Length: 381
Ligand code: GDP
Ligand code: MN
Image (cartoon, rainbow, N blue to C red; front, side, top):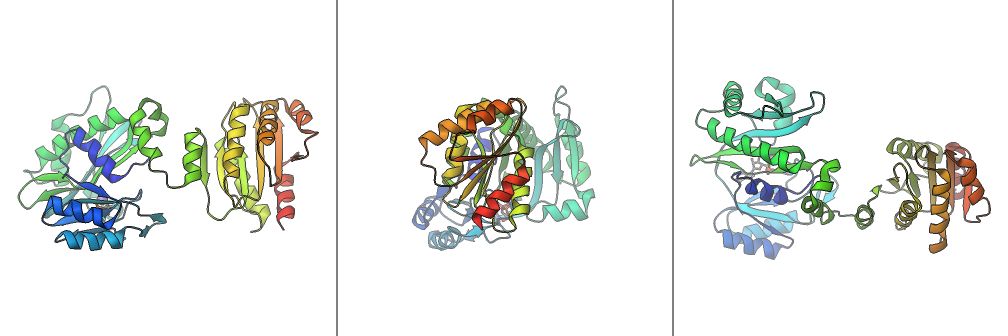
C-alpha cells in the first residue's frame, strides 16, 4: 500500500526524523492561507501516489502567499502519470546546498532489509543508479544483529557523503529503520535528504510503502488507504475486503479465484474479444470463497456502468464449486440483473455446482474459458 507524502512526513516526524512543517490544501485559497501562516518562500507540492512529480511540474517554489495560490491553481487538478491531483502540500522552502538519497527496502532474495544511499540524490536518482552504480552504497541488515552506527558511517563515508553530514545521515537512517520495522514498510525513502545552506540536514520528501499482508496489525495505517482511494468502486470493494482493480474502457466484468486464474481470464477475454469484449476489472475472490464473498464480488463488478456482461471463472480447489453456485444464486435473487452472466466451473464438486445452476435463467454455464469468452464476444457484437 502506498501512502501520500504528507502522511509519510507525519510518520517520519513521529520517529524523530527532521522534516519541515507543512500543511495540506485542497483549494488554492487554503494553500494561500497556509503559505501566509508559514511566511516567506514556500514549496507547493502535488500529492499523488507516483514519483517524478518534480519533473512533471508538480513541485513549485513560491516567493509569497499570492504566488503560492497561483501555483496551487496550476497544480490542483493537474494530471500526473494518469493521476489527478486533489491535494497540495505547502511547506517552507529550504535553501538546498546538496541533495542525497537514503532509503530502506526489502531485499526479497536475501530476505533482509537493505539500506541504500547515494550522495547524488534528487530527481535523477534512477539515472545515477543505472549509469553510475558506483555512486550507490548498500548495507544489508541482519535482523538479529540490527543496524549499527559504525557500519552506516562506513558505507556513507565510502560512497562520498561529506564528513559533517555523515553522523546526521546515519542517525536519520537509524530512525528510518525503526520506522520501517514499526510500520512493516516494504519501502521507506527520503529523496532528497538535503544539506541546507545553513548546515542543517533535513528530509524534504517522504515516501513509504506498507506491506499489504501486514496491514491487519496496523489499523491506523489501513485508514490512510481508505481515505485515499480515488475510484469509488475500488473504495467500496476494498471496504468489503475484495481484491478489485478497475480498468479503463472495459465492458466485461471478470471474477475468478486466484490471481493467476483471474489474469488468464482477462487475457483470454482480451484475445478472443478482438476489441469488442475487453476486461473491465480484476477481481480475485481468493481461495475458499463462500457465498457471501461471491455475492459481494458480483455486487461490486455490477456497480461499474460500463460492464455489459460478466464472466466468472472458478477452479474448485479449496473453493468448492457448489459453494460458488449457491453464492451466485443468492446474489442474483437480490440484484436486478441487466447483463448476461457466464460461468465456467471446474474442479471440486463441479457436478453439484452445475446441478444447482441448471434451472437458472440468468446464468449460462460453460465448460471452458474459451467458450465463455466467445459467447460474450458474440453477444456484444
Ligand atoms: P519528486 O520529484 O516527486 O520526488 O518530488 P520532491 O519532493 O523530491 O521534489 C523534487 C525536487 O524539487 C527536489 O529534488 C528538489 O530539487 C526540489 N525541491 C523540493 N522542495 C524544495 C525546497 O524546499 N527548496 C528547493 N530549493 N527545492 C526544492
Ligand atoms: Mn523525491
